[in-house]
Length: 246
Image 1 (cartoon, rainbow, N blue to C red):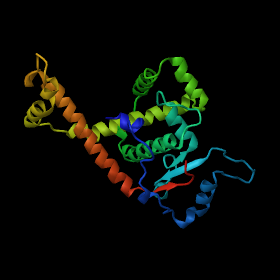
Image 2: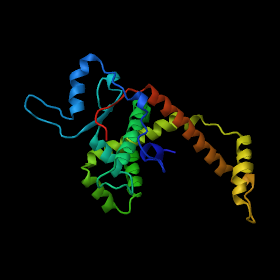
Image 3: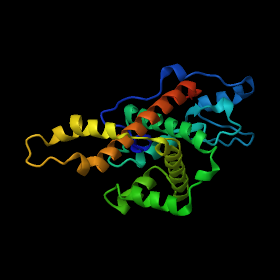
Image 4: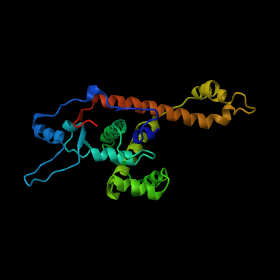
């Protein structure tokens, strides 16, 4: 279920951003900031510039700081780098927009997750998340090569993984703890879906044998459905501004 937040769905194309929420709603005091974001540069009196292109903002007008609101081109590349089997050579517009959609979803969830200090990720949880991520790649060496290719430092990787762990803990708190699967639902699923899969075989698992597996399947399906509804609502209410289309 959680892979949908961190990796793109199969057979998907294009951005998940609804055009209805790609609107400018910044207060007048932020007009200069908006101009700087759109041009993709941040100039100071000293002439210093930030060369990373700024792609979008999420709820920038309602946040006291932009730690989570700003999405840069580097954020998109880092998202792609952490997706196994995703090419980093001249990423397509479809790949970049899928990455953008995932990051927007992550930021929307993080806004809510940061309101719960009790789900602060521990060092061990972040370390475990890193080890599990590395195992999805052919080797440690290839994983490190991908990080180097997009300039993803160890410090920034830890920050991303900490956010991912926080997201997982929030989703568990918000959805998993309140899922109830009835015995009727389990029996109906066994009769209508599970048992027919074994048609033509000599042994068909009984309802009792399959109960635990079916309950897990139904639980994950309900969590995914509730999470999709939550994200749909969050996107509709969000102030998402596309600064530089990818």
